[in-house]
Amino acid sequence: MSDLGDLYQEVIIDHSRRPRNFGELEGATRTAEGFNPLCGDQLTLYVKLADGRIADIAFQGAGCAIAQASASLMTTALKGKKEEEALALFGRVHAMLTEGRNGEAHPAELGKLAVLSGVWEFPTRVKCAILAWHALRSALEADGAPVSTE
Amino acid sequence: MTAVQTSVLPPGRLHPADAEHNACLDVERVRQDFPILRETPYGKPLVYLDSAATSQKPQAVIDAISGFYSRDNANVHRGVHYLSEQATEAYEGARAKVGGFLNAAHASEIIFTSGTTEAINLVAQTYARTHLEEGDEVLITAMEHHSNIVPWQMVCAERGARLRVAPISDAGELSVDELEQLVGPRTRLVAVTHVSNVLGTVNPIRRITEIAHARGARVLVDGAQAAPHLDIDVQALGCDFYALSGHKMYGPTGIGVLYGRSELLEEMPPYQGGGDMIASVSFEKTVYNTPPYKFEAGTPNLAGAVGLGAAIDFLAGLGHEALAAHEHDVLAYGVRALSGLPGLRLIGTAPAKASVMSFVLDGVHPHDIGTILDRHGVAIRTGHHCAQPLLARLGLAATARASLACYSTRQDIDALVAGLDTVQEAFR
Image 1: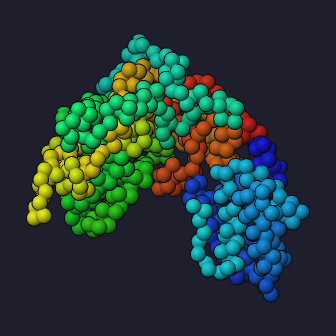
Image 2: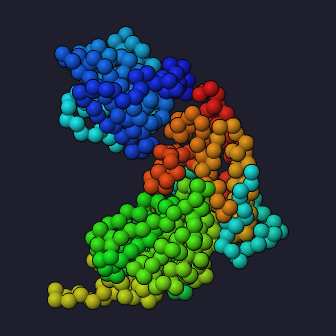
Image 3: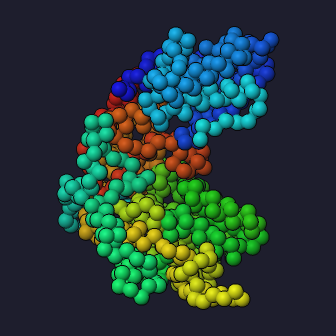
């Protein structure tokens, strides 16, 4: 079953139209760029790290509803998280998006991010949802290299 | 609004009034020729509006390819046996058909390539590479596909030449006056698309050729989007090179054509070295074959050429006037229908327009439009359409694009509009 309603849930539409933590972040200690060459999605992720925790996080960019909502939901989920917790969440979201119900992620661990689980049924859209998360990993691992989903 | 004229044809070849009086296309019968149109993605009837990316294939083309492998397959130009003669005849027969399709003066002016991209690269790496000096210029336009930009960037960088770009209006129309001012004494080549893959704009090739030739520049035309829709006459257009792809004109993938005027092909160096492109080889000296073989190293795409020949026969069977009238009718209907949707903006409203409707929708990214339409069985293209500089010129990152072919119908447009209603519903 791969209904459009699974993909375009109300929460996703809401976050895409009114993205949270949207804009440049003053005092960011890390930034990373993400590109999706196929559809032109582009985002810049700003992270302010303090004592190993994500003290603040924001993003800027343009893209489809899935890319925007995923980035917005990610920022709300990560504020205050330890770096290693953020990377662990990257792993769980990655598994949810690429392995779907066969993945090991449990909805309870994902909280609101579980609304992205429907993306798995739309293979062409997985890279839209995952873009911000790859940018996150690049920012935290501080290699500074722009990430591309191609 | 009805910004669409019947001028999807080069001026002087067909009067709009003739089209109405000539036989009309029996689109239901045409659709029967395309087996894929019976597919039902997600249980919905297929509404294929992505023909500018690649057209679907009629049964005659599928049969020609299968028939070649079933009855005629052998290598060409070499064998003394029966099948090799059959294969050579089929391959050279396809070349003659392409020559007729483009109204080339000689079949030897038709070079088979893998597609438009290779055809353009061939000219860049042979003609341009040997004619460009430091400070020379290649002129393209702001509406080119990446395949008519990057090959020129590469050769210009190598030769120290300069790539210049003729601007377009917000409606997506080439300014011929501004183009004329950009053709200077150092301009060696003007490379321009016949029909824009994003905007549908039909460019005035004959006029551009006159301007370029008056200043001693050669003209290459990217005909990938024009070949399935327009009546092409390279001699009337006056162009020096014309490139096209089989798969966009009902033929198979992996086959394309470069037309080049004989005197230019004669003096151009070979493109790739190998078998078939030589007259004689010794370790001391190789004598190259004559055109077109000089440019066709290795065993060519025989079945592809045969399939393209069948596609040309298919197009001839439709009748050019009937096809143009039909596609114009569906385009005009589509432009009218889309223009009526609130929040929708058509991208590319030049008066001379063929078979492409690009658009953006307020508050909805084209990629989301594409996914939702897909689940309704409606296939469109979304993204930058391999024309990022054009999209940047228009201030866009992406558009949604519906494109037409002989099998497109008003019902297809109705399905598109109904799908767009549900898109707007989802994002309300």
